[in-house]
Length: 150
Image (tube, rainbow, N blue to C red; front, side, top):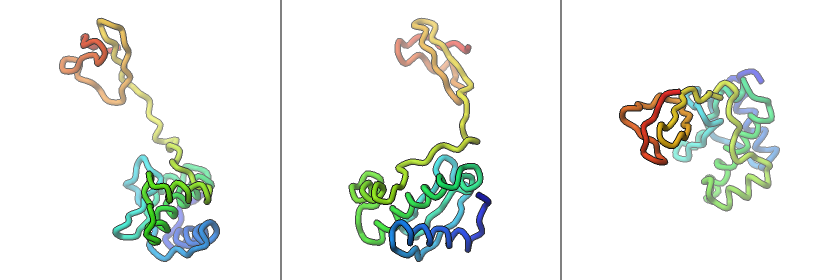
């Protein structure tokens, strides 16, 4: 899917809202490129849905539509005064009724390898980390032994 302009994005969200919820979407929706690990978010105080533009560009159309449906579940339940948070029964029920995903899949561009490998000198346990660990400061969590770079 190409990146949509504001009017096209609003029209898409409104159409999905009418199709799956039989209710109009009347508030704001926008792309937020600062979102990194999530597909979107609903801000109740502003009644705004923010969507990650990378999901529109990198993922399949049905994945992006699923993210919109998920955020619309938050939106419509909040407006109706029902439980709109992830742990609420109303939210979980509406997710199932509309076929909305509970979580979005990670972006292909965000899949990072765990580059740093450490092994405990005493017990041999291997730790894989994305960030470097100061081996002079930290010890093995299992036995307290000294960590070695691999």
